[in-house]
Structures are given as structure tokens and as C-alpha cells.
Length: 556
Image: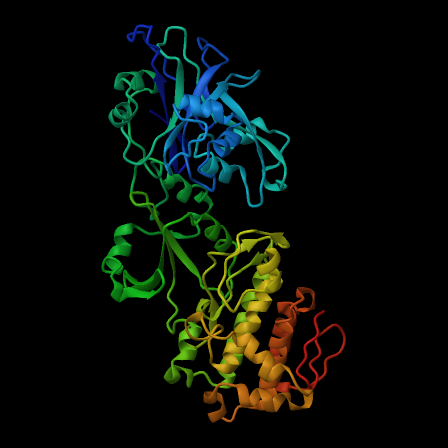
């Protein structure tokens, strides 16, 4: 078993095993097949090209449970797949079922490594690394992809680009007793003995093909002082969780699983804040720990790009390779989420109009930062009051970048979001732009003014937006103040809230909630206008935003 090492990263372990040739002796010696991040070395005694195989598990990374879909990925027919696995051509494999994928393995001219080339068309969000470890399940590595595609710039992939992905393989020598060698990605808990038993091969042949059995570790010897991660072992899902994080090890603290378990009393419900976020006391410091069961790399990649006082700060992370859990450790924000504060009448009284205006401004500044001061731009995609946290001074911080996306004017077919906050162009056409955040921000403004939920009780009631359109936005402009005053949170009415200021904020909300995204203001415009909200009915000149007596805000 030869580990494919990357400095301080969990190694992908590849193992070759032989499909026996019944008519041949089983005592012939075999030459080990050295492995590297670019695959198995070409052997001087290898019989290239040859029939080889890769072990692929059905039903992962969005590849349908269908022989044709798996065949398309590796450019082989479903008939070849069915024959190699003793299946009918109409059979649908079970989720996780191991499939032998037949490959034409060779050593192309000038290549030191053996591989089977497969052509792959780049889709939205793909990178060499993502395709290698998800759809191709670590049967190749991104370094090898870069080497066989010297004219392709990895950071400038376009949707529709055709890229060659080299599937690691090896050919037997003339002396070896095999009809073909199978490339197998080691999984958590695998041993030579377990692999030999599962595939009815001789355990000693694994030693001959791969060298002596040995374990792996998450980080190489000589890791950074004070930086550690729990667990050790094989790959599979675990490599998908932790690869490509080396650039963050100096920036963030790497927590141990034991620290998080002690700090939360074993993730006891008494420590549960909301969803899968727990309050943890670690070494006298209080943190919020987000427990995840899926890949956190995209969220980490976005969080390491941003640093703003109105964004919840990421303090560190932890990978539990034994369970596949990933933990993101954030600063603890004392007063919880905005939605809970608004719905609790006692806590809502702490939110006077000036405080709510400051919350609106804080949220605007945070969104302005990710929209205008990051490159590529970041779209949060999940702006809502439950993702706005309030600190000890009741200042707002944006949380939860789990759905965030980098880039602008992207299109997706995977529509996700929360009822009441979803922009119409995203819901209908899948269009992802910063203006979808602006729309959701407008809904949060309505919540701040009304003290009500965006989608009624439990998400099943009338939308707050529809109610605002009916009761506030419609009607004579000179009656907007009166309508806004009648509609606003009774807690604010008790505090003699300035009606003109409320009308100005409602005008900002109306602009943000335009159905045409082109007519919505930018967060630069919004932040500027709200910073002058106490000077309602004032006019601004030049390129700045104007707010007239109707509370309208003009987009630049």
C-alpha cells in the first residue's frame, strides 16, 4: 500500500489488486507499482496497453444510479460495464454498490505514469480538484490532471471546456498472474486482509503489487506547532472534507474533536443554540460550533477571503476523520439571532428604533463588503433574520455562509432558500446575483419595522411582503407615513417612533423588493441612504441616492 502524499494533507491511498487468470500459476513474483500524486509509474516490464479496471462506487457526487451514467463518465458503454460486473444491461446498481469499470490503460509517449484518459466536460462550479475527488472518487488527483492538460489554466475553466482526466491504472507484467489489475481507493478501516476477503484475492498479492501495508496520518511529521487535527486513517469521504486546506492552517486554529466534545458535554442538547450550532466553552473561551455532515471546503474558501466587523468571525475548524464530521468554530455572538429577538416581546422592547436602524445599517455594510470588496464577488444567498446575529452591544453580524457562492450572474438549477426571502428571478430562472441578496435584505427591513416573521407562523402564513404591498406600499404617497405607522411593530409605536424615519426605511425596503433586479439599488446605495435616515425627506445631488417625500430610493 503506497500512500500518495501531499504535505500536511490526508493522503489518498491507492491499492492495486489482481483479477486472477485461472490458467496461470499463482506463485509468480510481482514487481511493486510505485505510486505518486501523478499515479503509478510505468513499468519496463509492463504489457502496455492493457485491459485494466477501476473500482467505482455507484450513486455518489450526483452521478445517477444508472450504468449509462457511470459509463458516460468513463467513456465506456453500459454493455461493457454490465459484462464486467455480471449484470444485465438494464440493471440499476444499488447506492454504494462497487462497480468494476473497464479501462484501456497505457503509458502515453513522454509520460512517466500509467493512466487511462477520460474526457470530461466542465460544468458550473467544477475545478480539477472537485471533479477528481467527488465524481471520480479519488481515482485521479488534480496534480496529474494539470500535467496532462498543460495548455489549460486551472483557475480559468469555462463551462463546456473539455479536459482530460487521467484515471490511475497499471498493467501486469508478463510474469504476473492476472487478467487485469484493479485500481482501488482505500477507505476508512480498510486493511489488506479486508480487501482480500471482499474481492477474493490473495492478501500476499497485495503486498507484491503495492509494497508492505502501513497506515496513514492526517498531517505529516513536522507539522506546525499548536496546530493539530484529530483522527487518522483512510480516505474516501474524509479526503473530500480536508483537502486543499493547507493555506488556512496558519490563519485558523485547528481544534481537536476532544476539545469540542468537552466544551459541549458531548454535544448535549443543553448546549444547542439553533439548528446544528452548539455553544462551547473551550479553555475559558466561548465559541459557537457548527456541526456539519458534508463538505465544508466551499464555505471555508469563502470565509478565508472575508474579514469585516459585520460578518461573524471564523475562529477555526476541526475534521473528525473517524465519522466524516466537520466542525466550523465561530466567535460566540451573545444575543443570538435577530428573528428570535423580534418575536420575543420582552427582548423586542430592547430594540428601539435607533437600534433597529443600526442593525439595518450593520447588515447593509456587511453585504456591501462581500458584494463590492471581495473578488470574485460573494453572493450570500441566504440572507434572513435568523442569519443575522446580535452581539452584546446589539450590533449585527451576518452568519451562515453555507449557501454562499462566489462569482456574479451565475445560473443554477438547484434552487434552495427560505420561504419569504427568495428573489423571483432566482426562483423562476435560477439567476444568482448580488441583487438576490438585496431582495432578501428588503424583507429583513420589513421584519425590523413590523416585528413579524417573513412567512407568517411556522412559514405557512401569508408572506410579509404581500401584506406590506397591500397595506403600506399601495395608496397615495402623501399617506405613506400614516400607513407605515399603522403597520409597524406596536413596540415601536409605544416608543413614539419618528414616522418620517420609518417611512424612509420602508421606501428603501420597497426599492429593494422590486421584481426587476435591475431596478433594485446596490448595497452601496442602501447603506448611504440609511446612514441619513434621520434626515428623511432630504434631497441628495450628484451621483448619490435621492430620497423624496414618498420614501423612494433611486438605484444608480
